[in-house]
Length: 483
Image (cartoon, one colour):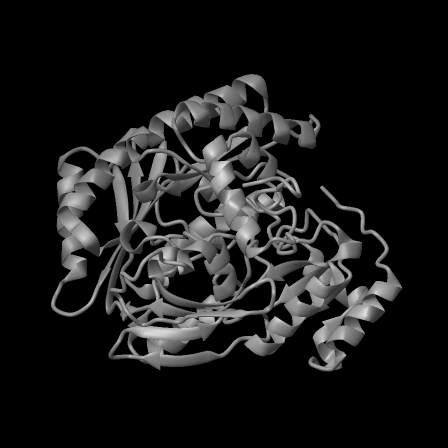
């Protein structure tokens, strides 16, 4: 899908540059061809345009940007590392919208080891933060495939999930405080380091997951833990996906909170990973119906390696695992995780395809996968389903590779409709961790109960009455309507 760029109005751009000229250096306003990289989605499916890209260096400059945009009636699309998958940071009305990139706000303001907290700006790259914390024997548990590019502000705005949710929770569970610039330029300072603070409604949670529709997150105080000194990673072959659920229940009982990841993959994962990484080492046979990649981690007096070995003895004795391998080094563990990452790259190499991010109750995950895959393959002969995800939190990425002889766009839309119809019967969600953005907006709005719509609309109008923040993202309101 490609959005044809409009032609930006030069007088409007001139007015914006003049309005910001007194407060922002000239290099902070990009226009013309320099805008293009900021108006493309992660997969390259969509290329749009914008009036300009604003790149502030501090909170005061963000405030100036929003005041200028408000005065000129411009929409503002906040942007982090451009790794989102639902078009939440891609402008869609080029002549009337500006991109606000937080990439230059990339300072780690302070690390408080005794408090197990860090205050960071929105443009800090997740991997950069994790590396810096590791030097201090500290750990921020958010783990994503895009962590070498994604930024903390984007993680917060989308309430990112990732691999470690079953142990540490979503991003909102890792945040103690926020700094937010409101649409009128005021700064809301909620940068608390307190782990217990029960003074009324927790306002920071309003902005986490809002995808920049209520304001711009400029900094956050994050909750840290001790750096895990020991990690045990295993790749396991199973006879069926239902056994993955039984294995997970056993792991929850026997490994408790030391289990940090529990992923399931189909056998096709190895083929796709090899297509992306031909030299990738595959340490076991790839003909089992289902695979699990699990990880235990800890520090201090626990023996994580021994725990993994004793757990797998139980799993084999119970008949839940047919084959398995335990990584004997960090390098081998990274190789096992490369299979998971390579699978995604392999799908991308096969061309346009449906990418879903749904969630269902844990107990119903295998039934949902079987039902949804059957519906897709029956209606779309030749299409290939690739289902994988996070067993521990019910998050399934049921992707569909269109049949090569058919119309890809038609197959993608038809497969999505079928999957969502099944999802509704399973009381699931169309967005487990990626957000709504612009890509899922119509589906989100169509299924939104009236009471929820009224409350969301009331919040939006109270904080952003001009509806300038990330227009057309998440929920589109009727201007002038009550709520």
